[in-house]
Image (cartoon, rainbow, N blue to C red; front, top):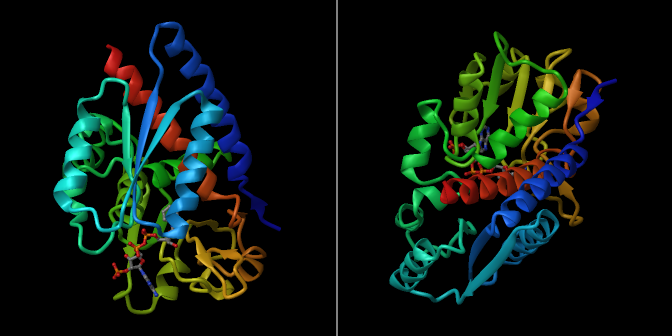
Length: 282
Ligand code: NDP
């Protein structure tokens, strides 16, 4: 039977460390602040933003949510970002994705001050991550690494197979794994015979957003299985990419969905906001 990697519990520990750190900053007269920008009324995004507000409250971080109408112009959004960049009370800025299709996400990401880019998506931060000198940790991949470390799993010399090559998960995941001396294979939708690769994985990270993609026969006996996917089943319940009931008997370690990587992503965001506040005061 696999050991369940409990992201909820570890995230709680991280949040209490962040709260302590926020208290130290407050005693020096600095209230760490996160500004979240939400464009439009996508219900899933609204839930994510509410969770971030909740996390900030628990961590002693002041949060402000800027709700903009779905028909906001690109210029209107950029004006707000430049105001937030200049605001000394705002240490971290996060623009909730996805943006309405009319808006260009790349120029929006580029408009955030890299020193406030707590999502680590600005080209400067992406470059620093690929040079193994991250200023901010990429939230989801760093959450995965923290979980592995907590459970005593060292990626060094292991074969890590990642499903997904997005800017937000797959690619930075590969960078962090390489930095920890794993041998890395990155798969995507054009990869033929996915199972032939996943069966070679000591550490399998799935971030495809496809429920049921990873079946039991795709998991090597004794592998570590990390399920980043968050999908909604037709019954409204959350599911990962991995067929948990099939993969769990083969795996040595496995993350649940929900309660695995999701809470870790949120906790790393809180950590990054503290990093931004600390750096702003030195
Ligand atoms: P994207 O849609 O941006 O990327 C998905 C990636 O998976 C792409 O690279 C795509 O390939 C690849 N892919 C899709 N289908 C297959 C397939 N059948 N076989 C192999 N590869 C495939 O998604 P994100 O990276 O933003 O998110 C991925 C998942 O993780 C989603 O479910 C998302 O909700 C979840 N997520 C969870 C987080 C958490 O905290 N747990 C945080 C962020 C995301 P190609 O490039 O060829 O299209």
